Image (cartoon, rainbow, N blue to C red; front, side):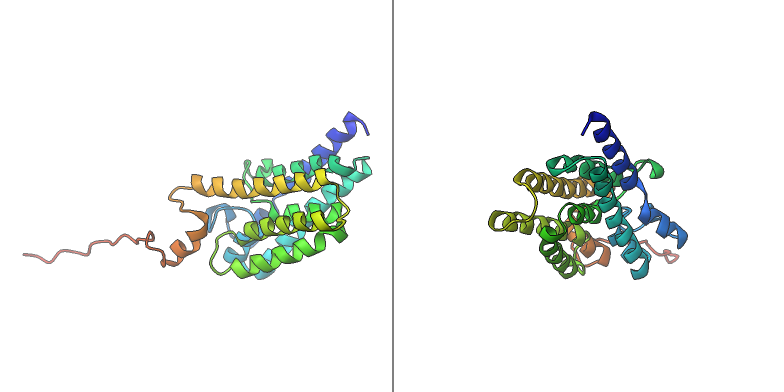
Length: 225
């Protein structure tokens, strides 16, 4: 493995991650994904603003992006904890796609694709746990995929401590840091949004159930004196 191999793997991973799947799918359905919902190009926002079938396509392609980034890196000679480099590059590309003026999504599903490619047998249980949590939180949370992803990585750490996941301690620790970065990225994004509220109450505000969701009243015409 040479420096050129590292640069190649990182460059290809960033390019794959930056492919704006959600933006392209939503655009094909006449929806401007950066102007609706959470204003992020991810499967969750597509599910809510475009539809289930569109979100399924986005989810599959985003996972493939992450997995393909790792497979290309393996082909280039990277192994072990070195695979964290293309993993980070793929997620950075998903966050900041040059094709959409450096906008993107959280990168949770792309991270799932990365995990599967690095260790299919060691990540199946964490992925299933994460999916269950995401589905359970979907009705009330704006970003169930983010919380599901974090739960999955916590499960991965527990399994790594008691079983052989096929990943080194450094790789598991690195993937956990990536997961924490995804959560912080999501939180920071919503803090920056105009009129944003904490992530856990976004759905309540949108539904009008939260006390902060005050709808301004437009005064009607005044009766003549």
